[in-house]
Image (cartoon, rainbow, N blue to C red; front, side):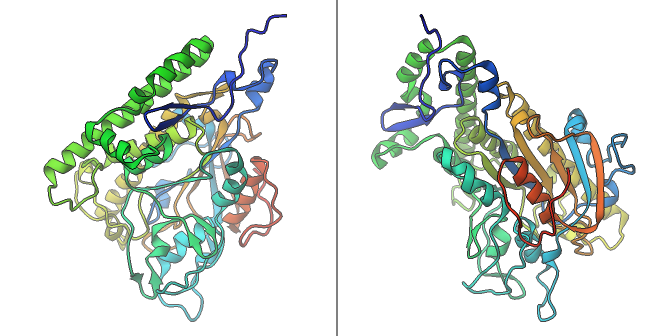
Length: 444
């Protein structure tokens, strides 16, 4: 009997000149006798949290009707193409962010620290920080057994230092991901650093420095290995490899252009090299890296922070230069509210770009989007009043976790958001009886 389907190891790398390049999931990585059903259902589910700071104008976020017949709100309108996948959730609360009697201020650091942990952070400006393990890291502990990186943390702002609000360390602002109660994971904001971490690095520092100086593509260095692999796999896998190579080249090219612009425009190096000047370009580049991590199966868990709490980022491409955080304290000023809504819509537009990119990448019997659980939201609801109740929560439902999209579901008031996380873990095949301040598992 002749076997036409070749099986190659799952953790195959392309190698050359001190560089190792991870590969996307290929059909040829499954056993030669595997059926189509086996190769389709065997794809791992990914988990991603996309977080925006400073709350959202809830009147423009929350759909008026519940159930499947709801109309998209103005802030959700950019996601119209994915309405059948949207699960809009109301009624959940970030309860552990509430201030204790002896605590002062600190609404923002408590919000982002409690958001994915369901745990009240310790008020301190010193090194004795303490919170809880975040839900992404519960998943990463399990999924990381099969991937190069257990998780990837991406942020679009530089880390802050010292004490940021009252007696709260800036560490609480800088991340939403905690691997232990005393170990927050830093969010990486440098495109080049993420790219090298994902795609591979030279084993020799001198070789790597020379490659970066000459702007050689990683794909050029592994071209012979790639050609050989292309000849040994089927047509479907060749198409996947072509698309993957195009994605790698595109990200490399954009990073190089950004670095050249930065070195020319900012000779004093006041900003990190490799960050595009226009925020939307920067955000899309980082989103592409996030997608690339899932496409190459380097990791299956990711967190993505548009900005940290109290972010003062301005968005001049929207036509105004007001800092985001100050606008959210609008005190009913309609002109400020309108600007905040524009920022909120801008953020969901960027999120739509992520969904489009993930939908465009084949994965098993579907796409990356089909095999991913993605949550969009903010640690606060009303940024003006610093409200932790009725959070803005949006799930993008996959096609493999028995979840139905196209709905707006309202749960009882003050239901812990940790109840949702228990449900998400269950959908991922990870069993946990409790998490954070959970009181039960949400029925999705």
